[in-house]
Image 1 (cartoon, chains in turn cyan, blue):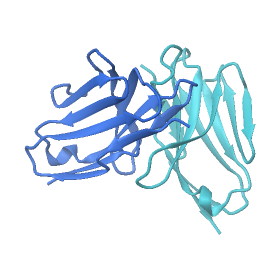
Image 2: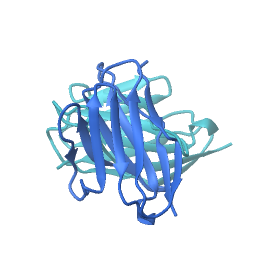
Image 3: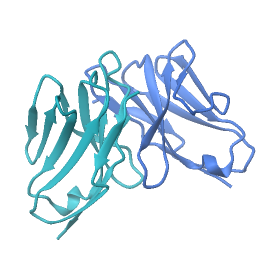
Length: 113
Length: 114
């Protein structure tokens, strides 16, 4: 089955700096890659997603890039703010199972003022 | 946007008792819902896929007799943790698709087994 690896497990940055989180997946059939932000004790919130027919997607300060050949995708957050502090999860799913997400191990991001 | 509601948000029970957690899609029909378990500071681990009107599909290593899933209607799936033990203490969270490709999560249920 699909296996998603994520790193780093923790990331500390200064406010205003950029943060990059990377994920790799094992199943070349996977074609949907969402990123979730989860605050302590709360449900995951979708922040951005990308499908395999696109190499890059951007939404304000957040961008995601996908390299299908290498089977990895990355989350980029620019101009980080303290409220970006949370745990971020990448995930992957396959066609016909687009709702069945396999999650990465998570990255705890801390943005210091 | 689509809303998925989960109840209860917190439950404390004695070892050996059973606990039922409900997951409802409030404004859409969900033929498929998913149940995840999340231990502290860990990732969401998919436990099972809940299919309306049929048996749930469990992930490898998840005991189906321990975690009973029922999806009797298009808006409700339930997870029952049977004969709960302290090691079952965790954050249980469900999800369902709103039909436009986005997956919506319930608020989660924190189970503590004493």
